[in-house]
Image 1 (cartoon, rainbow over the protein chains, first blue to last red):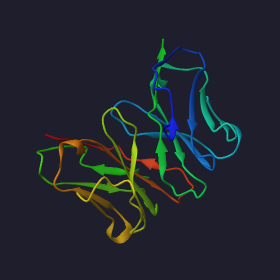
Image 2: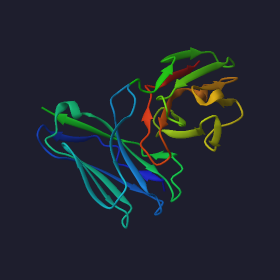
Image 3: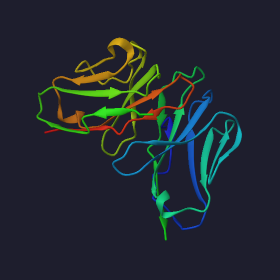
Length: 113
Length: 113
């Protein structure tokens, strides 16, 4: 079992729809969770960080964390073609917050006009 | 404010040669990380500096890889001698502290032929 798992996709949604990206992680003691967006050939760009159970909203993005289920998700409302990218889930694994990130393989999102 | 910068952006070298990658973190960020993505795989942690000290080098593949951060500012990652399997994109990231978000550079694409 991988430490951080994501469906590689591609996930295809029409413009204006809600895109839902999911991620599970193996270490129940993990405390910090991040979503990065990566356009082809570019660097990972931080979109959201979440540390507590529940929802965290920032503009069109909502991160959801459920530590009991070891599950973190990212919702993108009113999806735009410019949101088409690979979305990386990253976990600061373990309870000691070392700063070391474990990445999932990424989910490719395609938003069709 | 300048982000994390990496140099060079691309490097093509022959097997057996030496390559040195450089990373300049965001000013004031004590934590500096090196990651690598080989084709088709997820981004993987290589090592972590706090200022000039190596905190965790558990991800370094073997002793052909040497990372330094003299003076606690920029860092270099040397591969000597390079092998074909070292090809990939090498990312550098920095953060203010271990709990805070890490910001990534644009990466160095290394091709060993």
